[in-house]
Image 1 (spheres, rainbow, N blue to C red):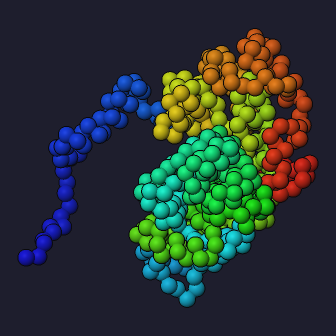
Image 2 (image 1 turned 180 degrees about the vertical axis):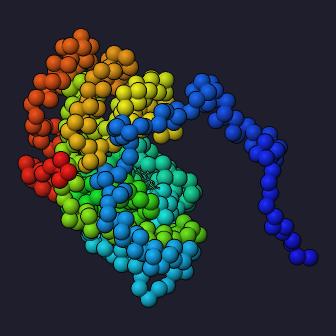
Image 3 (image 1 turned 90 degrees about the vertical axis):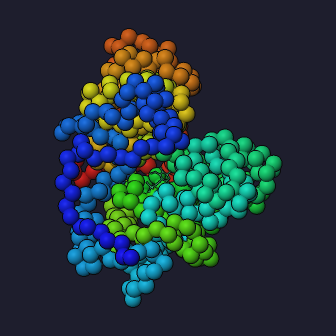
Length: 472
Ligand SMILES: Cc1ncc(COP(=O)(O)O)c(C=O)c1O
């Protein structure tokens, strides 16, 4: 008998709509969120529920580092592609065979930019990472992960049935020890860490991998577009393109869209296309989205000022927050974390910032350990000097209110020369404000200072040739 569907409009009031009764296992699983976390830990309000920004507020929580989400060239390219071909074939990439392979052309362009043999486009950075580890790691074999590596890399290990071996964050010696103990395997790191802006010591990690016959996977999600020549990323910037086996990218940051990439040898990319489960069993990215990505590459390769301005904005904000006593030492590029400690302290900081019109992003478990919750500021190239001064001013004003001097991160802050120590951070406000204005009046950022030196390699232009945003 044929299954008969009655296609009639259902006009039930919402109050009468009911969900099925839940079996006990399901209720218990979800109660961990509703009871333990939401009621006990967060007193009934989800920490992500802050206030909505209003016109005039400053948002430093988007990953659109180069301000391309509304770039006319990108938008017009997408519209033209939509008009020409609609959404195209909404099927898995393995079924798409056109005379002109627009996606393939984009992949080849990325491969050339990133100095790699080949590249494959995925539906997100998350699926690029899961698909990569799932398809290349052997069951029960070790996969080495930096403790702060993105969660999608961990998910890939689970999907592969492999064994996760964690090593200390950014510590090549810890990796060396782990490899000596458990033998060769994939080693996964982020080039630029998404919570605090720390950068991986890629050259040292490559050496350790080579010594042990391991293969390095570098997630360039936050560095693609923002670091390296024409935005090619940190592996290219450091001259390591022929020594890193795999690179992945999420297109949700400097590309300001959604999609992902895996970049590797021709042989491994072909294998990924036809063997990685998310590549086979998930629908491809649409043609107008690819047109948008391609237009973004045009911008990467012509509008150099965006990267210059991004790096200058980051240096200015980092130095301002550092001078106020905040521990922002981990930040080496456009991401800066203020780390109060537990979720209560962190929501207090979030509320104090938002009340004054500054909107960062709150991070808490599972994105961080319980005692290392944080507010992340992501800098972009569209922030003016006034915006940055306003953020610094607000962070100055709220220090006592949020108890910054007592944060564990503040206490960890190095006491090396030139850094404001926790005791200096406890000075009376007028005195601290003088520290701030002295600093602001210096005007010029010392580009040679501290960790910034590491990054000069990754910049497109030598220090000192920075030009202002044309709109300023
Ligand atoms: C380092 C890193 N890798 C991968 C991803 C996932 O990328 P996507 O948002 O494209 O799925 C993210 C975050 O979004 C990330 O921060």
